[in-house]
Structures are given as C-alpha cells and as structure tokens.
Length: 389
Image 1 (cartoon, rainbow, N blue to C red):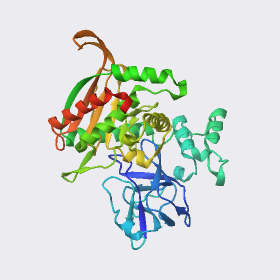
Image 2 (tube, one colour):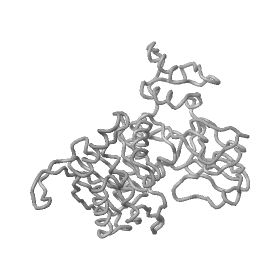
Image 3 (spheres, rainbow, N blue to C red):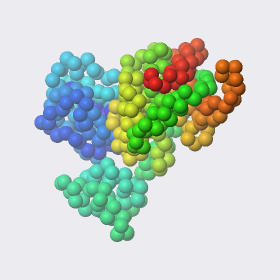
Image 4 (cartoon, helix red, strand yellow):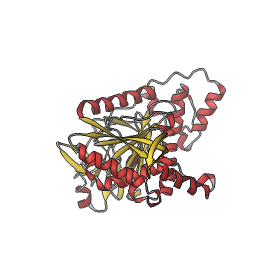
C-alpha cells in the first residue's frame, strides 16, 4: 500500500486545503492523472498522481486543511516496490510513499463551517473576490455543489446577507511571496552577471517566420528566450540543479519556470516542462496556455513544483534590466530587460542594433563566475542562430 501525501506546492507552503477529490475509492488511477484539487495561497492546483494503481481510501475530507507531507489517501499501487523507491523525493511529484498500513491524519484541522460548503474552485475564487459568503448560496451543481454561475447570480441580485471572506487570498499571496523571497535573500548567497545580447538575427528570423503565418500562429520573441535558456542548460548542467542538504542535486529535465504577474496582484512561476525537447511552436502554445491558467488559478502541481530554473522578463514594462531573486530551491534565475537600439560595430561598420540585457542571478554555493559567464555566452550564441532553436 502507498500513501498519497499532501504535496508541497510552493517554497514555503506548510499546509494546503483539500478543495475536491477527483477520484473516489475503487477508482483506477493512471500515472499523471489528476487525483485532487488543493488550494494554496496563490491558486487552486490540480494535483497529479505518479504511482498507478487503485485508490483504496480517502484519509482527508474535502475542505480539510492538512500539513504538507501528511497522508491524505491510500493507493494500492501496481508495483509496490516502485512505490517504495519513490519515498519522500526532495521535490515532488510523486507525493507518495510506501506504507504498510493507514496512518491517522493527526495534522488535519477540522474545517470551519464555511469550508464545509461544496463549491467549485472557480466559484470559491469569484466568491472571495466579490466578498460573497458561500454558505448563503444554494448550489445547482451535482450534489448541491456551488458553481461559478451560482455565485454570479448572487452577485447580480445584490444579496445583502453576504459577509466578507475571513481570509483574503491577495494578502495570503503577499505573505507567501514575502516568506519565499525573504528565505531566498537570507539563505542563498546571490551573485549577478550580465551580458548584452544582439537580437537582430533573432528578430529578423522572427519577422520573416511570422510573415508567413496567420496571426493566431505567430511567435513572440520570449519563446526564443525560453528555448535558448533551456538549451544553454545542457552546457551548464550545474545551473539545472538544486542545493539540498549541503550538496548539489542535478535535475535531468530542463523545466523552465516563467514568472507570471497576476491581475489581482502577486505572481507565480509555473514551469514549461522539458522545454529543451519542445519545438518553439509547442513552447509558444504552452506559454500562452500556462499564462492563461496561471491567471485563472488553474495550474497543475507538477508545473508549480517542477521548475529547475526561472525566467523573469520585464522587457514589456520598460525595464532595461532585472536582477532577480532566486526561487528556492533552484540555484539560478535569468532576467531579461527591454530591447533597445544600441550602436554596435559589425564587420567594421557602426550601426544601430536591437540589444537586450540578460542577467544571471546564481547561488554561489553551487555556481561560480566562470560557469555563469559560460552560460550567458552559450545563451548569446544560441540566439544568433534562431533557426536552430
């Protein structure tokens, strides 16, 4: 038997609220299937299961708040030996560990009355934003579950009995960001390197390529940055790593996190998984989808926890450069500023060229200046041959 644990979905997450079970006892679960929805300070996250088998028992009910790492379900794994080999990975998934018997979930807090209300994640999000008390709404969904449409109707009729929510997610998000960034600034010895990159070749290729495509299929230059960063990691693998328990742990997959600003304030950094193996068109599609789901609060657990390096791109806001703070437990962050016209000597002639400032923030416990400089040089080289990305 294997225990399915409350996952870690953020650097300083200590507990999560189980919003809904997607599977019930007796259901078959395949690798990568969504098993539950968990509410964090930043989003409602769809959590995947990475041990195939049959769901035997639920150890926590919907609405329960459970400490990270505590069991919330039992799974009869197809391969018990494989499940046992995946005990407590440093970064989840699979959030599963082997277990001989069920363990009581002593850390689970009984839900408050308002949390016992059955509601979809979208309904909860809208209710919080609108100051709606879900307990005052009659749900029309399956089993009386409150839907987003139910909340919209309540807002439309201007019900007077709705109280403001007890917790404000924007406040909790700022607290989560403050905790993670304070931890990073306190514990990670940062150093920064910069390199100006001539983007003329990349932008010329992009203009020619987009000119042959319908608007819906055109590429943004950010996707070239994502692919170049992912490929550059192959030549600087120590940057695709974590600092865990006093040692470097390299990651096999190049999962590039993207800092996404949220409309209500705050940000998240979900990852484009295996970015080095994907085409620029696939990355463009994935990037659009990731941003949309991040801003609607619908991300996968693997996207929130799987990042091995993060990109922050402030060019669209007019910043010339950005010196970012590394997201724990990663060891590097790449920042890009706006594209500016700069005089450059090319083939003996001076002329204006589109230039972007790339910045590497790195953990000096893992990375030294030589490796960081090598990474930026490789990044520059790759962007001079955009057709090969």
